[in-house]
Amino acid sequence: MNKNKFIFHVIIAALMLLSSCTAMLDEVPLSTLTPENLFATVADAESASNGMYEGLIYTDKENTRYGLWSVTYPAYGWGMMGTDIWSLQDPTSIRSKTSNYTLTATDEQVDVVWSILYSVINRANTIIAYVENINADQLVKNHYLADARFIRAFCYMDLVQFFGGVPLRLLPAKSIENDLSAPRMSEKEVWAQIIDDLEFAEQHLYTKVVPGKASKWAAKGMLAKAYLTRGGYPAGNYTEPEWFDKAAKKAYEVISLSGKSLNPTTPGSNKAFREYGNQFLVSGENSPESLFELQFQELDYGSGWGFYTISANKGWDNTAYGNFYGNNGGTVVGSDFALSFHDADIRFKWSIGPFKMNKTTGTRAANSLDSWMPYKHRWETVPGNAWKSSMNAVVLRMADIYLIFAEASNEATGDPNDKKYGMSAYDAINVVRNRAQIPLLNDAYLMKDSPYGNADMLYGMSFSSFDKKNANYDGRHEYYTGSLKQRFAAAVLLERAWELCFERHRWFDLKRTGKLLEFTQKAMVASGGKLAATAIIDPIDKSTWLRDTEIPKAATIVYLPNSIKDFNLYMPIPDVEIELNPALGKTHQNPGY
Image (cartoon, rainbow, N blue to C red):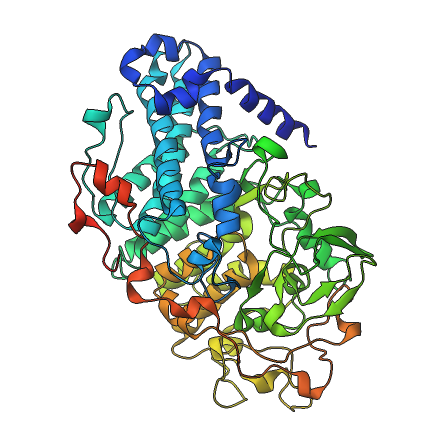
């Protein structure tokens, strides 16, 4: 295990003896404590900080309440499933409620997300309120203030995107009677607080990156993302261009000054897909590309990342590029998305599993499109509990920053060639595409209309583009419409899907760009589409079908996310919050619930 990761969790384990810095902050009224008891030394501040991060990842030993980033997000799909790229298959499973949009205000997972986020916010608020009392110089105090304000902003970003306007709780809870009452604020008011917190964090966090903790560069990257999201739907509605200007400038600051870059791949090498995928393995965690990862360790501090993989019925995939354990998680990748990758894209070769495995022999057999599954987060060892592996959650990495810059620069200038911010939008997106080993974008590429006629699928795709006998076949499948600015915006949105799939970005990306309803309602699981036996040996050849009749064709089964309705742009406010919060009533529930 990574030494830094081990130390991080040793500190976390020690916190269980310090209930004053974890459970006590949630369960004991702070009026019974004094600031001097809570915060006197730098060690106290560090312990409280670790307890704050612990709130994001911990699942109790009895599994009576699942953790947020450990189980609820990766296994229930909050922020990832219920989109064009990914869904659970079983409509009767409680985990499918995010995929088929049947969540209600009484569902436990809704309460888990809401209550854990506010619990962590309360821990952050406690640090903010009391850390000035520690015996340290102001630089150190400001670092811990910034650390807490980063995490508070991080939690409110989830709350405002999932639920819309929410109560803004900025002080530590001291009594049930006085602290439950908090009105819903507008989305713009919540975003204003998020941005204020992150702007403080970027100024005062330490530059050094410590695995599992926020740094100055993580704060700047998260701030760029906050600016970009604030400018989109529904808060800014693309009518306030200053947010895209701010996002481009801040992303470029990270690109040009952080010293961080993309993990490289070897051009033309069969190993390139494995070089790309290494950052999603336990052995490759906290890579040079990473800006912020939540750290996990098996069992009490384990995670469900990697729980959903290719269909293996729990067996080993024995390959020339590593041996990986498949878990048969019961999900399906949207066919529009899976097919949209350029046929040469090494990210498809790593991230998508178009096959199933024989658990006895470890050999592969081709799967039809309605059974393609994720294969991005691969297990190198078998965890004792399938939801408690050592796999980290990659929250923010440099590829995301390059794509934030590309999108924001295009929105702000109206021209992907414009170098107003130090580089062009094309320069930024092509850093990502170059690593993926696919054609670079330029005006000619984007302005080329589809040679295949009418689109049969999302992203301007036609089934004919998968037929190698077609004279127009060149490995490209997606095409765009509209002005150059509009085509680039569509291209960067799809590029984000290819690069960041299954990392908890897609739902948010589609919502802020106003595409969540359209893409999710139209996405499909296509029929046919079984690759040849020779094509599913690494590195996978996405272009070679079993036979001519096996190229993809129209869907014959239901894709669960198609059931999304207008009101599903927001999740329901938990009933318990409305019942217990005197400032809220039934009229404050989100419409449709």
